[in-house]
Image (cartoon, rainbow, N blue to C red; front, side):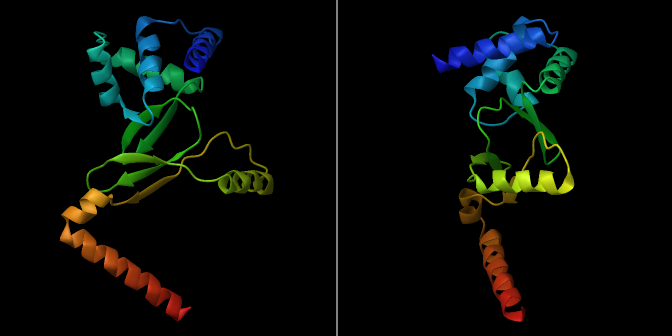
Length: 165
């Protein structure tokens, strides 16, 4: 029931923003709403093909641009690749530098308080923010002795820094 209301709200927003609810646009929104996290344009196109929708590159570009410009979807650029998602809830991402996996992570509301403080101190109207944590996932760390040694070196460096302070 909630998903239907969200989709109807998104469709209404598209229309009130001056857009047409095309088959491609509707499918993009549907695919993104069924996904729990970021999708690259390539992943999105593959999921559209499964639905027998095969838009050309310029159509995908225009539809994603319209949806992003009207705050219906969020574009997040990670390691030079654009990813898209529907802003259902606020979360951040863990990005593996080895296998490029992206996982969502939720941070408590202390970050929200800090954002309000930053906005107030700088007299800045914050609309959105993006925060990604880069490192190595458990699978890549366990598969690579170099990463395991680097992890130990990182812990030693932190320990040595604390001692010098």
